[in-house]
Length: 176
Image (cartoon, rainbow, N blue to C red):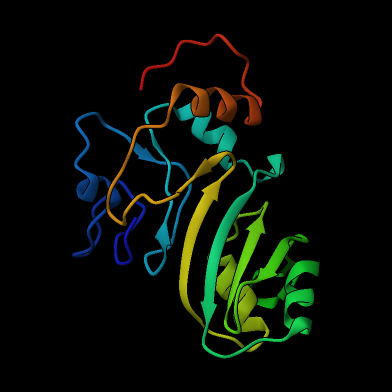
């Protein structure tokens, strides 16, 4: 998903929805959300029950992002992000997560939670502003070298593993 595209199937204001942008031949909808200012991997499906299993936060499914902030950070920032950040406006402390510095202002973060604008809120709570945010993995599905704005079908092997990770019983009938 490119920046500027909204993860909705309903047209609101003059925004382009992900389903309009994709113009896929079969009706599909996004699995979860990626805010308008973010880019990266977004799964699209016509399998509602699988989508619900993937999105259910109680299942602790991993989502990985590459984030660049507006100023250099230090090891204390990484440690605090890993331990969980109090988000006063949501009255919640984020779950512990994996964070790894990739540069002076860029880090990789792996979440098992998907609060609204979570990474942006975590960074802001610690005095940083997100410049770019790109999701690169959802569970076993990797963005890889897929260009922004393009899509590919997941492989049968990827789907089997995704269903297993999502807690689905093998041997169901799926169309996709």
